[in-house]
Length: 297
Image (cartoon, rainbow, N blue to C red; front, side, top):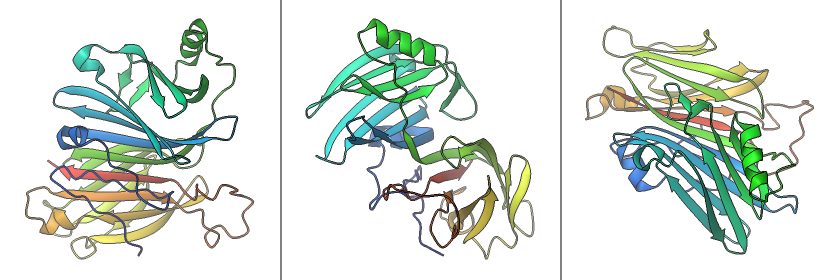
């Protein structure tokens, strides 16, 4: 089994990257230290001029309220741009911000005033968050496309072209007792799947781990006390997905509860997809990874 990062620190935020030569910088310490739930999504965005940017969007829910932080990295000249929005603390539920990053002008547009949430700090509908570089739209999140285009056009931006970002990875830090629910999208603009992780380490003589995708059991690990780390391959959307788990601290950790790490990584290597028609011309994007760091209450 290949090594993969475990949870570190009291809150155990998992920060792994399956797409680049080195791990990305972790979320800001202020967001990490007090976050109850935290979701980090990483995108590769391109301009028509072929310039490429790595955009990291972190949605967090803390004891003080909701928080959104964004980091834009230009790998070419190693320039960095950061923005933090705390809409529920300072009533910035709708807004606009311009920042400079080297020779590039970065503009942010957002409307979270009517955003609806599920169990995750990441909104599911009725919102938009958009980023432009040199007045070119590179990233648009949310389901209010007409509203954001209207907003941009009214401010002299050309939003006629649609951005085509490449989704790289998602990391999620969640809490629970016996079950942990989230969603994942394993390829491009493919189907969004419901993932349920069930694990009872207290009320049974034989602790087990059960993973369901869209209500269907795809993996079960018995004798979990002796198989607290491992990996297993499942099929989702016709693609092999490698599932890694590490629940050592649930059994042997010093703190009550402890952290568990689950990583779902799409397998796009030649040996796993030999003979496939898929052709990956960009060597940077090798696979997508979803990491879930869970903490028992």
